[in-house]
Image 1 (cartoon, rainbow, N blue to C red):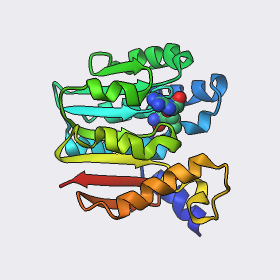
Image 2 (tube, rainbow, N blue to C red; image 1 turned 30 degrees about the vertical axis):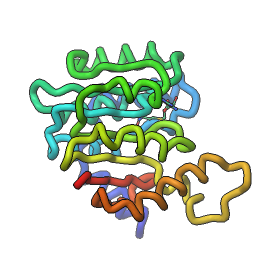
Image 3 (tube, rainbow, N blue to C red; image 1 turned 180 degrees about the horizontal axis):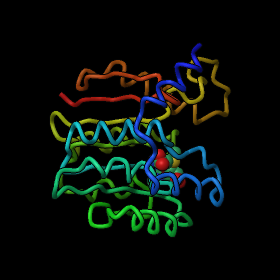
Length: 210
Ligand SMILES: C[S@@+](CC[C@H](N)C(=O)[O-])C[C@H]1O[C@@H](n2cnc3c(N)ncnc32)[C@H](O)[C@@H]1O
């Protein structure tokens, strides 16, 4: 029943647009660990959230091949800009090509490097931040971006379920699960934000800075 309802909710969701379909297909064919990409259902959700907020500025940590950047950028206000940071320089050719194909070149600026080194250079605030980079550093990203989020701004965090491992006993050397659990526990007690966690895909958390 659950999987029928899952299919039904996808059926009742916007189709994946051809550019994004192409990004997903090519990522699957040519890039390691393609399942890191947000994908159709979550992509439509990110686009919808961005369209609801109409942000002037978005920051994304973890571009990968550009799928979620394209989805989020679709909701920017008319002069808005999305800034996205990717650590792996081998992905640059895909990022550049995919942004070009999306027709959003003038709205998306990408940076190749470590988000933790680049974030301090931003001198303005963001209306929306999407955290989707190295799970071991989630709390560090949160600390780094917090003051750069505008009051009433939003932070979306992907993979907060980490394949269900957040509910299991953490293996000693599993720094990824440790990172996500440490982050989730911190957020649970952080009264500076309102929070909701959606059981979508690998767990999607939405925070609103008070
Ligand atoms: C889950 S993928 C991002 C998926 C993408 N947001 C999407 O939905 O299509 C995570 C990406 O974060 C990148 N990454 C890891 N650590 C990073 C860091 N410190 N700074 C910037 N990017 C990082 C990885 O190289 C990887 O491409």
